[in-house]
Length: 280
Image 1: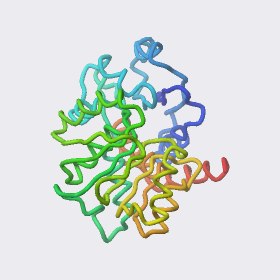
Image 2: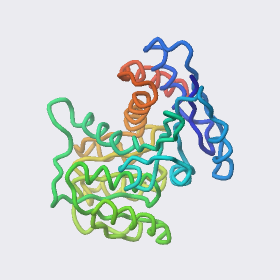
Image 3: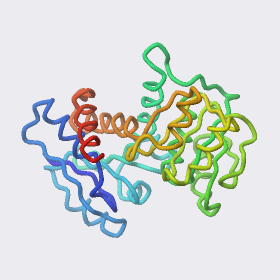
């Protein structure tokens, strides 16, 4: 069986390392997983070429939204966020899933340790999300799943707020769009950064001087790691989850969806960390 990760650019992707490690651990000798450069224009043709020997696809930028009208069935979470990062081929139909949201929740829970269910979030908790793209929409859904009912979203380009507002409406979440860099109105219980590492430096500086002290942080960057934001938050006592933790857990769920088997999380983690160490 075949599987692949699609996106543009895609050469840097760690997904092949994680999925191939899972296949080895599960004894799926006939399974392959590759990285394929693909933009929005090329996506319909690539999907049309996936026959019965294909199990599924992982999707990254810029395809998570573009794939939705090309699917036969979209799970509720992907519909709510307006983003599918996973396509599973089953019964001749294309099924869209979002594993980013449960991946974020699992990464944050892991950061808090086995004795805790994760961030202590409730309807009154303050949530701050940096960025306004598809990953930010998934971050908004993760905050909802954790118990939040509202969030402040700091956006660099206000024009990108349209998709975010639409996702918030579907998620029944109240959002406040704030100019990127403006001081938050309150101390966030949860901070999720979906922007490039350098873009978040201002927030790292605020944490370092105690002007911003989140209880929990998820930074979706995984290389290079740690980011200045993650370092500052950890030094101030926050529970910190990184992009590799997110990538690992969302990939494990993809493996489960595509193979029907329990994902070998530790084998995937070891392979991924080894690959990252070689890049460093």
